[in-house]
Amino acid sequence: MSQTDTVSRILDAAEVLFAERGFTETSLRTITSTAGVNLAAVNYHFGSKKELIQAVFERFLTPFTRALEEELNRRIAEGVPLGVQELIECLYRVGLGSLGLEGKDPQRFMRLLGLAYTQFQGHLRRFIVSRYGDTYRRFAGLLAEALPGLDPETFYWRLYFMLGATIFTLSSHDAIEAILREDFGTRSSLPETLERLVPAASAMLKVDSH
Image 1 (tube, rainbow, N blue to C red):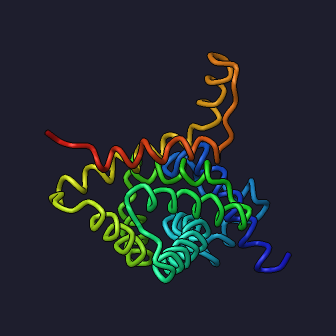
Image 2: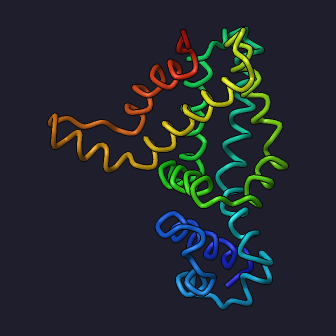
């Protein structure tokens, strides 16, 4: 087995197990057993469990942030208006498209992202800020520009309310869609659900406080 194959097998196993069981509940031995490698391979290629967690996120975030930057550059160059709803639609569409091209499951990534908050991983937040902070600040800055007069603390809360709704909807989509089928006899694909979510998420940012 080549080193590339070994790394991919470790990351694939870690991605699935972390999403299913959580970071703290998943041991390195469980990951190595699932991947069919020994513990020394994890230590050699990643150094520690924390660095393995970071590498799992890197596989999602690198193509996503690259695609988001390219799409924002294209829209700005073409003079496309970037209001709140347009920015949210761009975020969802680019996220779904870029992860799909990489063969990554958006729902799994959202489960991992949700776990990053519920199982506080300070090292992961620092990693994401250091590696992808420029893209985050650019997108958040464009959102803030589209919401003139909103004070920074209120913007902070509304942004995280919107992200929370997004993470919950995507990470739980299979269950939500099953309830939809049972209660209404209809179906909703992930792209269709995101299309419904765009105006709702935008409204969370734009809602009048008074």
